[in-house]
Length: 327
Image (cartoon, rainbow, N blue to C red; front, side, top):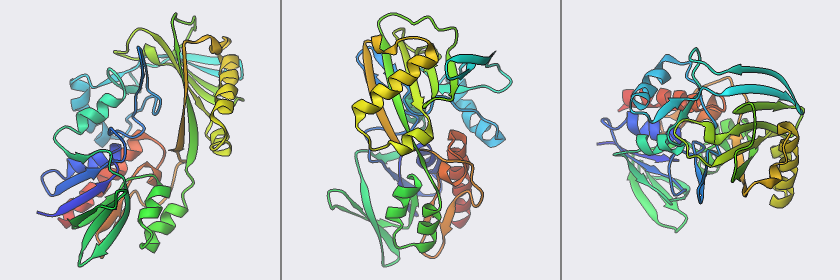
């Protein structure tokens, strides 16, 4: 059976592995301790935070079909939040998220999605692939311990474009495609409180500020009771300050979020910052994935389409369909 190495255990990598389960022997290599990428959850004592993707929608019929079993099993749930738009410190509009366009989250936390989808897959965690070599018509992967993982017919790269470009150094076409993409950063501020804050909303889009998003994470379906907030910076501010001192970034975003919420958020019991270097990308034109039939190298991910979970699925699903034809 054809052997395929998938580099990256985010949603794109997991979708590829699931879609090809009956057609190839597929192994996923993930550098982190868990799967899911930005569909992530951070634990801090009694507090839990979805510090990556906050929610997702499903406009594509194929993606809705893919989600239905997860919805049926309660792994994905609709978040009927009270949503507002804030101009610096003034609420300019508000509405309830309804069933007309569900805003989905993992339940009881975002990382439940990756855990569920990865069941039964061959996934090697804590394995960082630093280079790939094409020798004798097959691929060899080299990890950060200088171990050679040999004998793969295809390699599928699902990491963000800058990381894919490093592994695709010997493929000019894919490397050029990666270098044409501009990925944007984001800071995620996680705040835990001993007592709930009195906020008349659960999710807020913020404008005219260096923060773009504030949500009551603990208001999502199935979450634990301690009150938690997740704050995201704007992509533009993060990209301009991505390597700045963590304490300075945290204090600035605390100040900006306090203005938006009308509350002193420094009074919380827990405060932590996470730096997402490759968090988002504007809507793209061009191919939804990449193939090189000669070398049997492929790539997919949201950066081919748009910085959305649905885009990760669409890119991986398109790639899997083309791979099945070749297999």
